[in-house]
Image (tube, rainbow, N blue to C red; front, side):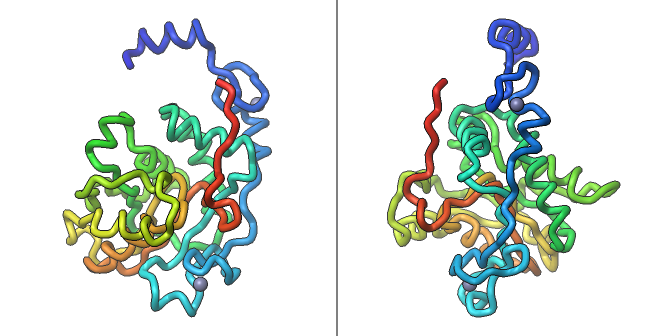
Length: 249
Ligand SMILES: [Zn+2]
Ligand SMILES: [Zn+2]
């Protein structure tokens, strides 16, 4: 969208806080500060063991390459649910700013080590053209500047590629089918960039986690040392198939 076009839209349809309606931003400072971050974190594989910062529990380590998943907030927060929906399905890229702020707040208050590299979960070029932006890459760019004061952690958008176009995971209900759907969907393009590195994988949301597990498997297979992941929210086991929000737009 050109700047003039955006200006017209802003004048005709001024942006307002999607929670309280205050003009100016998609989410005003006050409403942003009210979004609750998720306290208790669980092992991303069994989703049962409570672990520090969502590290993978001892029993699950042999079953998965993902070393941990930090879930920053929850779909139970209605404002956050709305933001995610608008960001992902209504194509409002500006929402990456408040979402990244929630994520970096959670990361900096955790005891996770700083990664060598931040890698956003890639989109297939076809889906990227359709959406116009990779929501995970926008979040990754912000996190790179904000998770360590004075240090910019490098982001590598091009080490991991989605080489197979898959059905959207959201549309598949069955856990095993999701796993099959995502298998071999990714490949590492520049293995030298990740060899021996500690990687932070970034995605907007996780459902069963199959995408993150698959990315971690591929990255570790090509020599990454540790792969941790971070998402804004994850569908919890009890409401996995009924995430949504009622949006009146
Ligand atoms: Zn507000
Ligand atoms: Zn576990």
